[in-house]
Length: 176
Ligand SMILES: [Zn+2]
Image 1 (cartoon, rainbow, N blue to C red):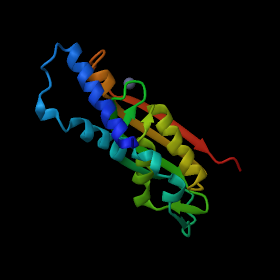
Image 2 (cartoon, rainbow, N blue to C red; image 1 turned 180 degrees about the horizontal axis):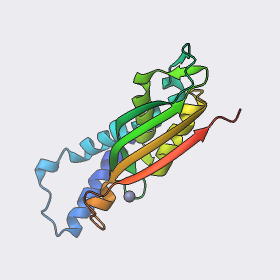
Image 3 (tube, rainbow, N blue to C red; image 1 turned 90 degrees about the vertical axis):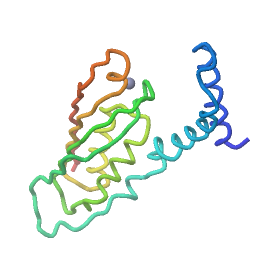
């Protein structure tokens, strides 16, 4: 059996088992296509970052202005999946970096964010991986990533702290 079918069948099992524990007759034929839709969503969208390689995405341009100042990109949106609950966390991030001999192509930065966000993640790790990638693949002297996110595992369930935001700050420095 192909992997895709296997995953679809697993989601079918999950729905059937949930139906049992909800007392039956909860899910009707309108959900017939749900398992294949959900399987496709996980593979093609929510976890597509595992197929994206930041070292190939980053585009470098010579820092001809010899600009030693910090470059800051604000308000970059992202969506990610909490690895503890498999629930989305999402928000905005600010990326700051001090260039070395190169500057990063601006349009590629949201793609680097997506490459790491579209995986099972922790907010802290997401920020650190992006900062590390900007130093390593972007040849920056240093990088800082500030993320503000809402975790639906905290707002839609659990403590239901609706509106609460989690802020993290991660940085990386070139070793030379
Ligand atoms: Zn969580």
